Image 1 (cartoon, rainbow, N blue to C red):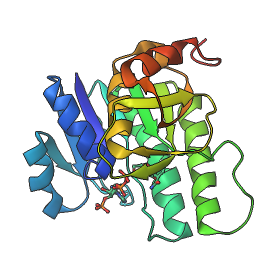
Image 2 (image 1 turned 90 degrees about the vertical axis):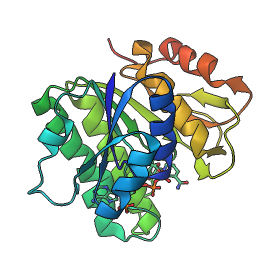
Image 3 (image 1 turned 120 degrees about the vertical axis):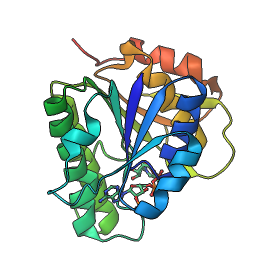
Image 4 (image 1 turned 30 degrees about the horizontal axis):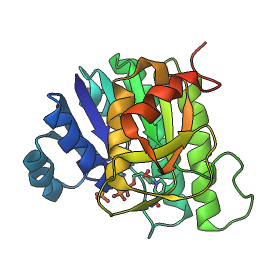
Length: 221
Ligand SMILES: NC(=O)c1ccc[n+]([C@@H]2O[C@H](COP(=O)([O-])OP(=O)(O)OC[C@H]3O[C@@H](n4cnc5c(N)ncnc54)[C@H](OP(=O)(O)O)[C@@H]3O)[C@@H](O)[C@H]2O)c1
């Protein structure tokens, strides 16, 4: 499988690249900073320069030929409300449109817990949650085969290989390495298509937890 990762130099993205490459897949890491090319190539990916916020750049071309795309970009904790819109929301919209035009059938979105009922105020974190919520709705309403993965608070701890997953789970934290392992398994599991899941650290082996997604309410009709 050829997997394009939008936000390819992100922390979850780099774990994901290494996992997918180890499983024999080809990864195309979309990065915006030329200084990041060597890192993602070192992980085993092909690097493609593409800035989501530069509408003049050829996102369709960057995705063409891929079997799946993972949206793992984010404006990041230091950014203001405007970039929550241009990256976290509009970045997904652009990715959906480009994937549809390029004929890429499958999309996994790395979203966030707290997006079911985001607060209505002007705090940047609230704007972020609303941007993620809107992005998820746009992705799920598209013609693509979409899975939305909403992790709790991300940590840099070593992956445990164990999680709790569900349409709704109690708030918690999860290592980025485990989020990447969830996304890698979701990509390989058509039963997850159409589902939105929350995921935090927990007791269930990732492979078993991901297999359960198909039994949750929702999903592709
Ligand atoms: N932090 C949390 O606790 C938390 C919780 C739940 C979900 N999430 C979400 O999980 C996802 C992955 O998190 P993470 O920690 O792996 O993120 P990260 O390390 O901050 O990576 C985000 C990536 O997005 C890229 N990016 C930003 N603007 C871009 C643009 N205009 N064009 C192309 N790429 C762009 C960044 O590139 P540069 O390196 O060039 O800036 C960066 O490599 C994010 O969507 C985040 O919102 C985070």
